[in-house]
Length: 361
Image 1 (tube, rainbow, N blue to C red):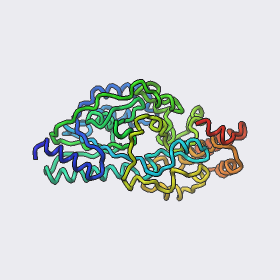
Image 2: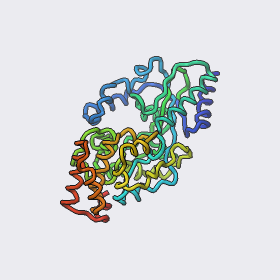
Image 3: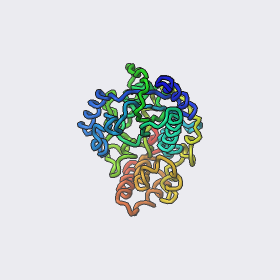
């Protein structure tokens, strides 16, 4: 099969498999490499040492997978239908806010499985070829590759945006040695003068348009950071216990986002509308059971309790909240005890009402 015909087939197969868009690009990321190295030099990757350790492998695909000359980039929408709205949860500080992407099955598993199906179809048509599949699972500049493959532009919040889909989607890649024709780069950004994402960020992590200091980002603080959350950010975290969607929530382009029809991204265990006290009461066995096959498992039980303790410190003062925090006051983990003590101090020093707590988000 000729390359152009194969590329056309690949895009059709991708839609059949469950992706919403497929694009193809080359491997030149020299401009993005400069941006990456500057970001690392600033130290904005925080404790994500793997970002620096992998170095230029991230921006030079052929160093990561020898023989790579093309990248097939795939988009899959994930916004779960029927979820309690982000605004409703954030404005009720008795509830736990969990990033929308983590309410269903772990996207790594779903995307990798679908990409492998796509590879199998290509192999059936073209015969054996060199490839490697990625879904946020290796040093890959996913957003830059997706932009180059025509899947969208990189917004001021550093997320990929598509004019017909907003930013509520995952992306994955197939590195390949197939000489496929490349698609036009999506090189026109449509953010204009809008700065909604910059202004809404609770911790001012978007330090300038297109520049994010991960050390200040709530997603980093609640997921990637393994130690103590800096005190300067704890009150700003509000009731966000796993990730943060604020910059996507306010983005005008997300009015065009579609709900996902993918069953794997359906809400599990009612986590779109669960109380902080309930989350804090989970035993380690319950945590493991409720996060089986979920991206939330990544944070681990100890950091889960750390995160929820902070959110309870920001919750309305009540006997139930104080009792919940006291129940973990002597927890074996020093990390958990530290954040419980901080949370209790917030209520003892300045008891807060529901209205005052909600208005802080």
